[in-house]
Figure 1 (cartoon, rainbow, N blue to C red):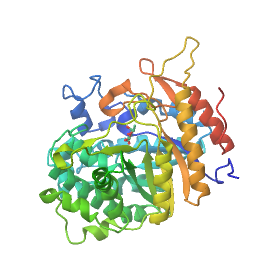
Figure 2: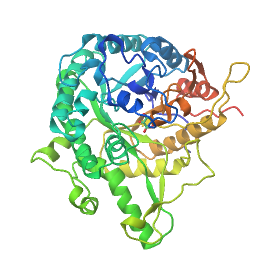
Figure 3: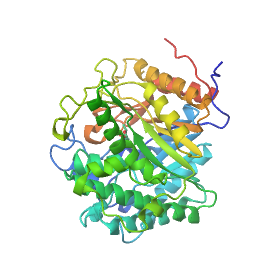
Figure 4: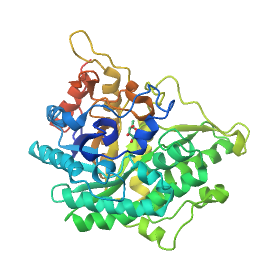
Length: 449
Ligand code: FCB
């Protein structure tokens, strides 16, 4: 029989990102980031909002920690904003920016919450973008210097480090599809960005280990498992290609397998320029892999040929309010595949969650049974994965509270706590209360109906 308990010492937490929660974009010497510039560009953010105030965690971080404590969480994943630490990207270090994270870390530890830090969750200093950003090598060098300064300051207390969050989003979504900052539409640039990011990751790994004794170092990748809509040869081949472009392109170089050959060939002249040592640098062995899982993609290729390929519409029946299909089986398939085919020592589910149109009820509660059900389904699945022997050591729900959800502004709510953006009051939703019970018991609990 499958136990309903998670392994002893399992990490229970939530995840956030600096630009999505902090606000205070002018405070204590913070420099401009590419997201400030992007938000200021008309039409880029659905609601016309900016990163000010977001959920104003720069001032309300103690309220955030109170939420974690109320949920009995023993871990928290958050990111450091590079433009707070080195406002122009590669110039002077700004100690006041680091002071904020110093206070955060001390307060977390006091609350017996283990900090997991993401070093880059998308807020590149704008000054570096003005010089070509991630498409250029000097940004790679500047990143390594920023990592060095940050880990030097916090590495005596923080042991879990993630170099990057979702390189696919930083490269393809932001430089080819233009949906995120800096909003470019150039596949060749996007692929060079992807490569440079991976190199920056590989260069940062030994720097983190040098600055932090007994560091646990990893990277966070977003996986969207690919399934064919039918068993036609065209659908199968499209699915293989998209799997290679979306998932393997980032995973395989890190695992020492290089870029997937078919995908490489399919990109023609757009493939990135690689320096002689790069692939070795990228493949420095890690302590863990962070996996972000939300949904799957189903692919259909009615006619064949690059131009006519279309993404199959996802099931419109079982979806969150972002139209992302709810399909925990794909998380199972993904983690079993990672467990069998790769040898990461530890895996963390670094993001998983759902957006719904939550409302505050007249008596000040938020009833969000769909979110509870989403997490319940995924945790039940995760337990099966662990039972099958895959070393998943923690689960981080996206997100702690409603925040600035990138191009959707505050219109897309992912929080376990509801944020009233007028007062910045945080209110635990029913899902957060239930998540707290699970974390405290370290086992699956049936949600109350
Ligand atoms: C992920 C991002 C995170 C958040 C969730 C919903 O792709 O890492 O910042 O926006 O999606």
